[in-house]
Image 1 (spheres, rainbow, N blue to C red):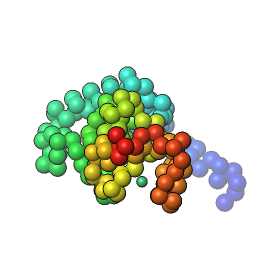
Image 2 (image 1 turned 180 degrees about the horizontal axis):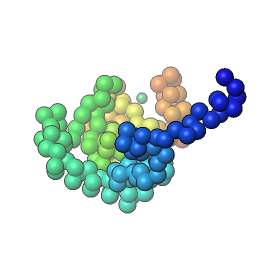
Image 3 (image 1 turned 30 degrees about the horizontal axis):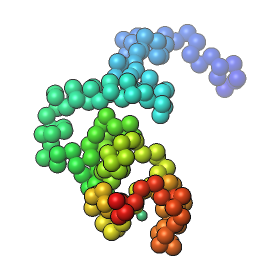
Length: 172
Ligand SMILES: [Zn+2]
């Protein structure tokens, strides 16, 4: 066949509008649902979710749980907002915490030291379990290191300079 014929394959043909009611409309008139729009707007905000937004999200979740009784407290897996991760660390459900994960959990070992110090731990500050039992979260079982480097040094050498230690529960 000639080039001309190839380019005009549709010439003279009429689209069966009953068979293809949306022909030529494409995405025109299609709108994102409310849910999708929220998702998109949250996605655009990236990681800079404000405390206000976090609270809003947490409230939304509480509302959701109210109407989905299989979630949250009524779920048989719910253990009072406490769970142990495969590595042995204890996590507490605290969706209002500044540094909680996306599911609203915060490691208990960080929480215990925060309560003791009366401030949030910086993300690079590393708690260490003195007796190496990861679920033993008594305050006297903790050391807090300034960063990963000092923590690593302590594991390798068994000690590190006083400048690397923020808190030592064994020396209360
Ligand atoms: Zn350690």
